Length: 311
Image 1 (cartoon, rainbow, N blue to C red):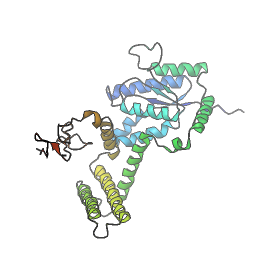
Image 2 (cartoon, rainbow, N blue to C red):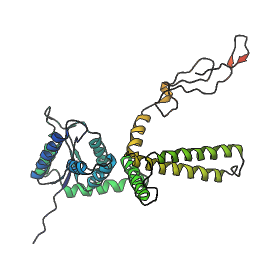
Image 3 (tube, rainbow, N blue to C red):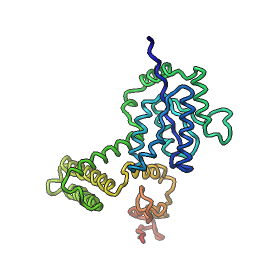
Image 4 (tube, rainbow, N blue to C red):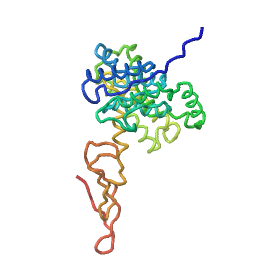
């Protein structure tokens, strides 16, 4: 007896909390899944995690890790129209993995207001034979084989954030086994401050060349130790305060990398003083000026003088 040919697995992506209300979004996801199922494929609906979230709330990256894992097991992704940062990340991962994405964007003749256009397109391709899971799998394998070894080693941005989330969970599990597991939620913050002090101490003594810190290898060992401890304490603090370190880094980096300080700086005549958008550092947005060390400026008499600038 011939075995039944496995049906293609399809990931249903779309808004959950990014736009609209959760009940409507869940209803739309189930409708999309039924369309996929009727076309002859097997849908995966991450929106059903809403029930899990109601019973046992988790960090944002907790859900994204599971979503990314299931995407890797699917042969296509269908995107319900609507604003959704999470679904956008899922689409980006599919493009990186060469998994086909069916969305309203790019579909000729998409009806205005029809959030299921991409799903209808997939169902049409599947029924007409244009979507061939076996051919597609072979083409993806061939494409991946053509990628350089360097590209194969590179991790996508989302995978990095998932890795940070995993590490936070591992650190949390370790803390749960320690006698200080019931410490106050602010305690890891004190540890961060202590290790920042250790890092500053390593820099200072290396700069002074005393206490054996004139040895660069020893100085770097001290710096690495402090940096590692800072990260561990950060993960512990995030967990103790029901925060996601991965999400914090993602949000900060998304903002920081959009800045170009070369274009946004203004120089003051006669001195190398730069005041950038009232920022205290090139990274933060907390406010306050940046001042660089003044350089000699030409005076009225042709000599040089130094202008003082500050608050």
